[in-house]
Image (tube, rainbow over all chains, first blue to last red; front, side, top):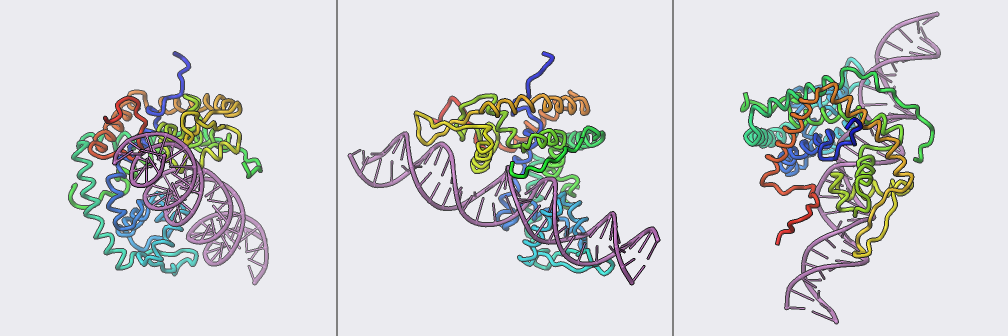
Length: 162
Length: 162
DNA sequence: CCCAGAAAATTAACGTGTTATTGAGATTAC
DNA sequence: GTAATCTCAATAACACGTTAATTTTCTGGG
């Protein structure tokens, strides 16, 4: 038929990606939960272990988080003494973020479990298929992000109370 | 290379799935936003268009939403007169949900744009690759969920465990 | 130096994800 | 027929996603 109906949910691409992500996250969340960490908090700790002294904008980019989310996450981690801030000398607008000793210890407590989960997934799904999946996902993002002219941002009307 | 360190973010599977999902959603969100709909609200409206008179538990399963989220979404849609509720006769705990005329009209206003976005994506990425991606994602979920109890339970008609 | 504009970070406001809890209505057991 | 139990739906509490607005600081042109 020329005019197809909308895909059913089971074949909807955003839904399929969501399901897959949740299936994967289910393998990681129990360990994180034992350490009272959300997936996002763990991303931040990993990123800081990779490279300390990032400013917040750079950290947000590496963790794929938006500023406001990261701002709240850092407040939380700071309360728990897992990170600390230092004012940048060059630019007083910037804070540089560092793992504390406790943060570093937490990383080393969680990391082995996290690695184990990756190996579980690789074993269950197959190394080749996993690599193929990575490539497809990457290519999808590339091609979709390429031509974005059709993104006419909407005209905002004032009614807030929608 | 698999035993040495955690994957970098660029190669992390949850992150890759997240990026892909967001790249896809970027194509749909502008249209939804023009109609003051979130992706989840749109999922609910689509599901109701498919099959009206669902109870909330069944609707949650079809929309892949958890109860509390759906509860809030339905309150929102009800305030906006896009859905209405009816008490089930058989079981007073259940509400059955229906699209109103306005909800139905909204569906028909948005659906063509949504279809067009799917066609854009298929064109950009390629039909074959898209199908391959679907299959891989499905297989990933299957293999990871094997042996786990599913979090988002689907309403399976048919065999109730005897 | 002063001021307009840009950038870094936070805050505000709203909607959703998630777990635990609650309350009303069904179901089962005894 | 009543008590224990299960189920449906809503609520509470917290964290995150997202857009807009605010504050502070830096920068560049007069």
